Amino acid sequence: MKKLVGIVLVLLVAACGGGATKSLQSGEKLVVMASTFHLAALAKAVCGEDADVQLLPAEGADPHSFEAKASDRARLEKAHLLLINGLKLETFEAGKLAASARVTLADCSAGIEKKFLIEAEEEGHEGHDHDHGHDHGASDPHVWLSTEGAALQAKAIGEACAKIDSAHAEGYRKRAEELAARLKKLREEYVGKIGALANKSFVTDHDAFAYFAREFGLKNVGHIRKLPGKEPTVEERSTLEKLIKETGAKAIFIEPGHDKAAAEAVAKSVGVRLAMLDPMEIGKPTPTAYEDSMRKNLEAVLEALK
Image (cartoon, rainbow, N blue to C red):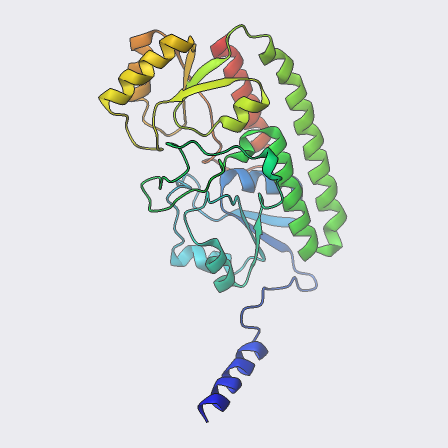
């Protein structure tokens, strides 16, 4: 009898579509949710007017500490697709969240070849938890901070949208290709300019810019903080000051929204410039936000290291 009841329950769940993701209905517009600002910006560029792109965390929220509230889950339930960065960047259990909302989950880094990925620093991402109880994996997750990485993620977004919304598949793929072409042009424009700099060494707030440095031939020789939001100890500051003097690094780059007191103190102590680099973790997503932010970062590097 118990076995029969169990079978009936399974059939009822299957009949109700339990566990299945929502499909796009005739006349319905695709709704895309993104776990980060940079993914939402890339998605807006790829989707154009064919889809409604929204940011799952509230604008200005720290992506390293985001956990979905009831209101976030309610919004997600109205979507069809959830985009995540992957590589263990997200602090929430994306698979469970997507399944409970019956939305398709797209890991935008899943298709990136291993040879492209950079190994996480021992005292950076690998084995640490950002003070939020979550470990990043063996690979640095900040792939979007290179234009090539962003183009790969944009392609993944285009394919994910095309699979759900086949009527607009050509548009998604075309816009992803156009974005990739613009990013390649941007990369080529600045590789030469940055290559002409006599000194390419700098320090960042935390270890988010390895892909950026590799792509443009820069040297990110150290970090103010081992973890975002964690102030350096006196010993760590002393070690960093020594490193800056040894490497001849010309600038320290802080991040929007982060306390700059420690960076200012180090910069003053060793006599280097203080400037800004945006890791694109917080902001208002627009179709041009990624390109605008990347160009601004590149100009900041040219100005600070000239």
